[in-house]
Length: 67
Image 1: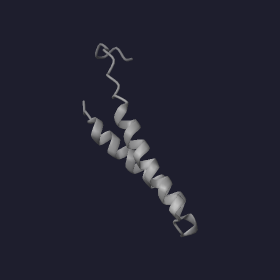
Image 2: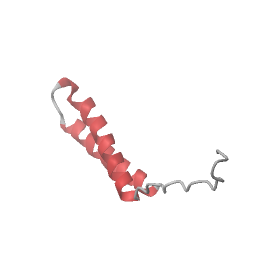
Image 3: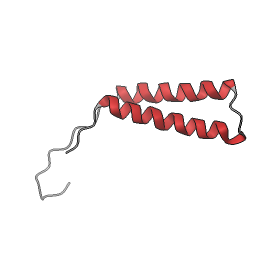
Image 4: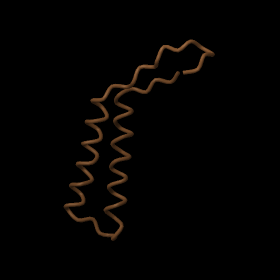
């Protein structure tokens, strides 16, 4: 099983949130200061929330029995 650290999970979450906000901001080909603030807040919010939520522990399932 591959274990992903909390920091790596938070970085990926922050990058994806920032990318989504940036794509929305550049649709009119001009990035205003308000849109920049939105991008920064999306990145910081995703980093903080994703880092704070722990990874789910796998259930104890007998191999071959399914879930």
